[in-house]
Image (cartoon, rainbow, N blue to C red; front, top):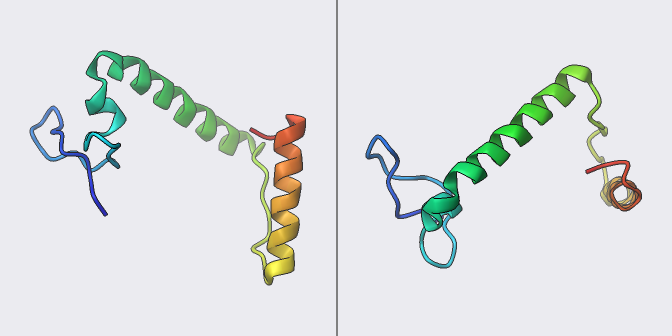
Length: 85
């Protein structure tokens, strides 16, 4: 799989997935990199907090296609109703 052709601050090759330009979102739009980084940090922080508070939904591993279909249908309904992001 291809990776971004940009370089990190330390000079190492960036391993993020590239867009059409060959650069990841951080390297393609360096003027917006700080706001993208802040948004990413906030999302990670929220996910960690949700995990600590055990507010994340969990599902048993599907054992067959019907189980998977049921989980997907419930997830779509929860997202549509605003109960899940």
